[in-house]
Image (cartoon, rainbow, N blue to C red; front, side):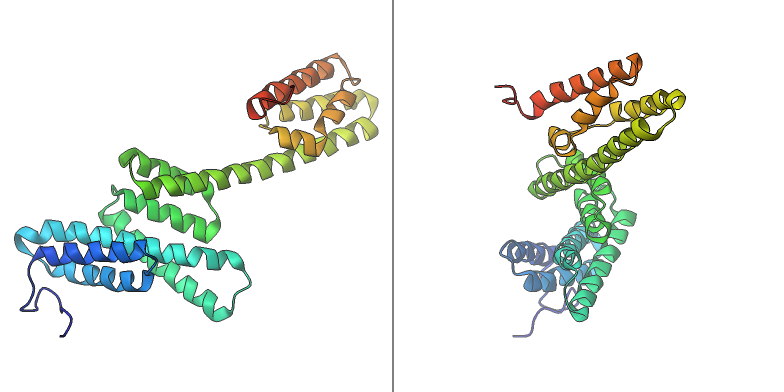
Length: 260
C-alpha cells in the first residue's frame, strides 16, 4: 500500500489525518525514535498549507506545532554534539545542518506564531546550543512558563537552564572576587601611603556590591584579606566588618548548619 500523498490523495480523510500524524510523531519522539518522528512531522509541515476551507485554521495550528517539535528535536540532537568538541568533521557538519534547520523553523514561528510556548522553548534551546546563552534562554523560558505554566517540557528545560545559569554566575563571581582579592593585596603592599586607603576603599566597595556564595568565600580566602585590610583605616575597617557580616549572614541561608 502506497503511503498517503497528502490532501490531493483520494484517500485523504480530512483534517483528522494531520492531527493523527502529529500525535503519532509525538509518541515516537517520546520513545526516542526521533528519525521516525521527524518523518511524520515533516509531512504535517508539507501538507498543512495545502488544506483550505473550514479546516485551514486547524491545519495552521498543526503546522506551527509540528515546526516547533521539529526544531526542538533537531536542536536537542545537535546541542550535545556541538558541546563535545572532539567529534569528526562529518558529525559536526551534520549537527550544524540540523541546528540551521531548527533555526529556520524558529524564525518562521517567531514571525507567524510568536505567542506559542513552543516558539519560546525552541529559541531558548537554540541559544544554549549555539552560544551557551543561558541568560537569554532563561528569559524566553520564563515567558513560555508564564503562558503555559503546566507545560512539563518548559518546566524541565527551565530547571536545567537555571542550574547552568547559577554555575555561570558562580564562575563569574569567583573570578571577580579573586581579582579584587589580588588587587587588595597589591594595594596594601605597593601603594603609596597617601593613596593606599583610597585604592583599598574603592576595591572594598566593589566587593560589597558583589554577590558571593559561601563556597567562593572559602575557596578564595577573601576573609583573610578582609581582616588584613581592617588595618588600613577606620572606613576600611567598617567596610570589612560589614562585608564579613554579610558573608556570614548569607552563609546561614546557603548552609543553615554552618554554625552548629
